[in-house]
Image (tube, rainbow, N blue to C red):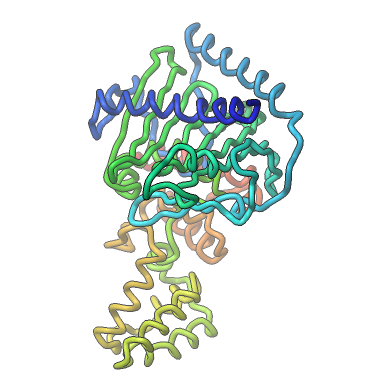
Length: 401
């Protein structure tokens, strides 16, 4: 009975926000916000933390209620024993396929039908996972029954993030598609996928007005294109917290196409050149194998391919190279020169793991601003991100972007 009550309690935390979101979406199925916020903040880079404005008495009361929730959760979960250790990708694997999120349970074998606390390597947050395999066996009958219909419920608690103005609670459910619910001081965020559509709902009570905004699109990429500000501020950090991945960072193909001064590695260039004959072979199996080998080269292969002279390639070689580059791109770069003048793109590039890209982006920002810039800290650190945040706000005002 205790296990059943525990499962019901977990599902309640997930399903209740989702039902509330679905109701709001059903009553207001629009692509633009149902209610526009009083002020429209400028689009911020994905790493920027959300800073709530001054609130009135009602907003203060709701935030105070959230703080009480935090204390209740600490009392309930901090004392739970840790059942095991794992890496985040061993807990779950979230991927983006044709504009939709897909979730697969990782190699970590959590006990079926019960809530378990696990220690995720590199994370100070508390993670609770529920493997609902047994539950599905009892709920689903007929051809749809079985382990294939198992779903995972994941909860992440990082109460210290509340004081850093970040998400202190995130819950993810993979039942019937991926849905997420997150809380930060002053607002709640819900994301869901239904009927080949994606939905983002933001309930913001920091101004005391309880502003409820709904956004929808056919794909996540389209959602980002239509509502870049909301994706950067809400969806991107929420996904990054539960996956460790930035689904919206510019891809290698985008960056290397824009920053033509970054040279290719000679070894990667040699490997790509060696695959060119097989990419144009008469035998399909040989061509297909060469494409798979090309994909293994990753970002280095992308850079090498972009720096080759494509005029000498056959139609088949061009098609296969284009396909390879498409898997490593997340933007549509029609004009590299225009990309180098887009501040959001350049700030994003300064967070890239390739130092040559980050350096080229810094130089491009200085050219755009007309003066040197100073960034504190090392890439990937909180100090570095805070410095980029400050720079972004400063240059937005200077450049009127």
